[in-house]
Amino acid sequence: MSERQAPYEVTEDDLDSVASCLVEDASAAASAAKDTAAYDWWKVLFALYPNSKATHSRRPRDRAVLRDGIAELFLADGQGHATRPCTFCGTAAAAVWTKSNLPMFDTNKALNTLPPGVLGWPICRGCRIAAWALPYGSWVTAGSATVLSCGDEAAERVFCARNVLRARRLMHLGFESLPAGARPELVAIRALTAVRDGIPGASTLWSFKNDNQEPLLRVTRTRRAVPLLLATIQGNADLRRGWRLLELALTRRDKNGEVIANGPAEAARLLFEADDGRSRSFLYQLHYLLNEPDRNWNAQDRAAATRLACTYAEEILGMKPDLTPMATLIADWIEHGSGSPRGRLAEYRSVALSDYKLGILLTQAQFRLALDGRPVAAGPEDWRPLIQQRPRAWEQRMLLSATVMEVLQKRGVAVNEKPVDTDEQERTERLLEQPILQGFDDDDEMGPA
Ligand SMILES: [Zn+2]
Image (cartoon, rainbow, N blue to C red; front, side, top):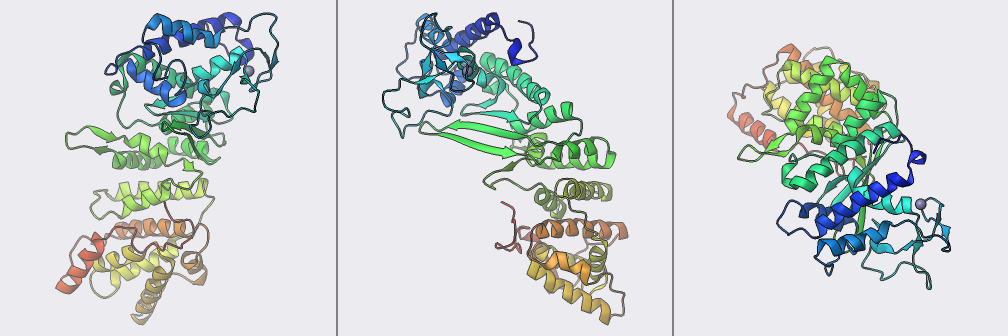
């Protein structure tokens, strides 16, 4: 079948060939033995249509019988039947479907979701076929299917085309043949990068799940400026380096060296935010990596990661704070205050994200520098956005800490040397062992999830 550019170009012959493909694949999956690769496609169908002819526990196991039963779902409407407008597109439709054949419709909580006396929803042949073609163009797992909408048909087409190839592989070789730790966010980001070329526009991933009781929908979306950010990163060597460092840092392997978290997929995931607020923050992740005591990033790596954080803050969040005066004040105090630079860095690290505790540390630092006769780099206007509880304040504090680290590294301050004083040494190492979340106020605006 040749490729169609738009839905209206699809012919009746096209529908016939797609329908026969759906029927063949579904009957093969429904008659496959449980421990075979072919059975994995059945798991996908089960997550979407758990009570259909192809997935019901009391279905026939004979492939020919299954094939005939499933084929009935996609037959063209017979001539002379009464029609009503299709539930989804308004085309005249004679066939009616109940919830068991439709993704996201099947709940165990209600036996029937139709009004009394109504046999089902009228659904045209095109929409019936589309409802079962869904898993091919979706990014599927054994219990979910994820689709992309982004207002750009070309990008959506790229996303679907990659998933169709993946689905074919899955049907023949099973889930085990697919790379571990892969995620739909990466496929979506690659589609956006390939097609949108920096043109702003939000995109949304819709994940359909079914836990055998209830269909669930999880929605995550990118901000409008994400294509712009991706284009900026592509065009800048420092930012590309920062992004690559992020990918490498997010890659996780088990003790046999097998990848369990795929770095590029995890990095792409950070660009999507969940509607329920339960997603990791991009800036928080970079902040965490920049502040890990054992991270072996050199000065150039740190500068690249810091630049990436600042570029994200500017392009996605619209923040462009000048943090140099405050970073200089803190770096001066870390370098010249009493005790060792490592001890003071540990102290700063433990309060870096807290409005109140950071305010106290800044006050101490300011007095210390002034009493020692050193210039104080920052004024009240520089302080204000960092010590207040207000939107974007914690992001500013993260960017500040990245900037402080950069200043220290540029100056060559030896923060790796342990304090001479044993009490200070003990306190410092104890502070450094604490997870970075400590010192983060729970009631703070927009805390990381
Ligand atoms: Zn329709």
